[in-house]
Image (cartoon, rainbow, N blue to C red; front, top):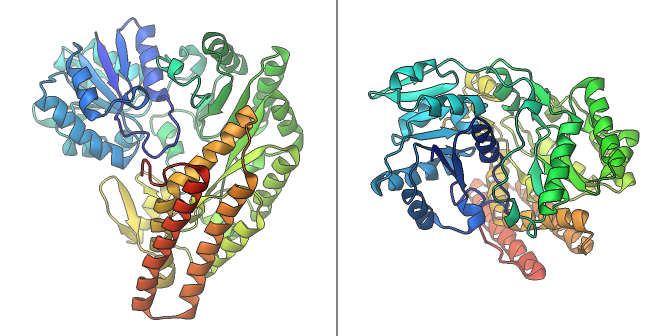
Length: 506
């Protein structure tokens, strides 16, 4: 075998549903398209722990081991896993790819000495060239998009331009789709790559522009729907979550592509349901009415804030009124909504926290623990650059932290972050139940969900009141732990009501 692709057993620990790795599926498909032999081992879907995965890996004979890694926590766990594989006798070279190693390729190779290569950004073509030349180290320097270790030195090759036509890539190899047909009963699907927007906290745009490609590339509607028809015919799965950074392409052409997509589903009489992410400016009654007819049941909106100055700081190119209007339109159409929200960033003021609380109280949609989210400062983001110049960052290994100037807001942030961790799994469970309800028309207790949301709103409200009524830092710190305990009690309460373990997969 040429390449063995594996996933870390803990990669899905923060999710309440099993989902396949589209990154590995696309890589496997492209390699097979070029006549290389590939196997994907997915311990998350197979129910294997680390020991079983290691045993399965060392039983196989292959030329190259590959992993895709996107989060700092999994990258640290990957280091430990790869070391255990080496100690178990696995001698094949190792390549990492994914979002995080792409931006931090040299740091990754410095920190994880068992790794030989990092494939940066879009990996299909680079991985094919790497396996073609795997036995010829003198040719590594010619593989664009590759950073590699050779004779105890690290070399970084020029970046590779992106694939222009996504329709030229075969559909992803869904080797484990049969395991997902019943639970969760939907598949992830990708209709585009990249993002043409430029939020200051995000690196999605840099992921495509740094290699020298367009900000956003979309598959043709017919190509997407051909894949949907293939999945329905092969596995009987009719529910899909589009994992695009943004489903709509730029401008009028982007909207026309969405109309064509909807019309083609209706023309072929395909019975399916789907969810996607988009910007609030994309929400228009006419086009979303058409999308609903085609099968749209739920939308993710990155509202991010109910405070205009924060939206401007984030460069969201939206207004608070547009946020509210988009929610109203979707509600009128009967389309469900999940929201992204950033309560805290390095510049947040106490007044902004209170304004955000007021906004969250005013919207009638599932909010969940994400309403307590603090901004993650990703390396490569515009926000990182600004904060570096202002010396506001607290450096960490792969992402940054920060301290808010206002002590009251910083205390609220730290407290609510701890509360969010206590509540995260229950919040995700409820979010998944809402998705299942949308896909399968299953009963979902809306009153219970509304009650959960308002318990969280009241928790934040109590924290704000506590800060307002005293300047005694010691007393506030002591009260902080009581709020964390309160959030744990809320989690346990709804775990009992939902009949699920409250701290599973934390």
